Image (cartoon, rainbow, N blue to C red; front, side, top):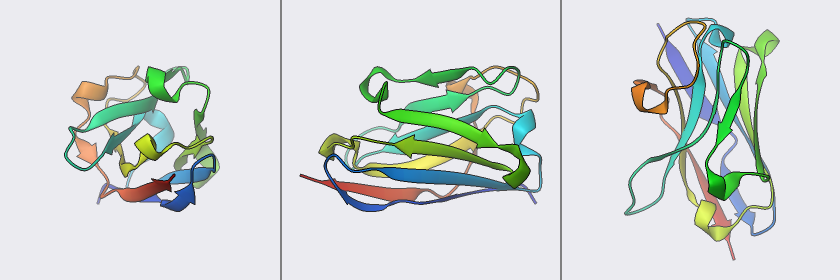
Length: 124
């Protein structure tokens, strides 16, 4: 059974750091692009970052550039999102997802396989 499981969320003060994990089961994660998304209360979900499978190109929305880093650990079948210098506006439920298109670049809008999310709260 294909599954993505997020972990690592929590409560942190502004300026702090968290590392989110996205662990895959039922498939080999490094064959596929993986995206991180977030949805804040009362707001639409937005794509935050993505790592391709073809050449590990990375993408970030402007609001997190220089603060967030996406990476893979293929041995652990896991993708990480390191989040530094967190701000209250980063508060959201964070999800990872894939489109299960092997050896392809990121296409955030095409991602339809989702984890259940992990909540991140940044206090001011």
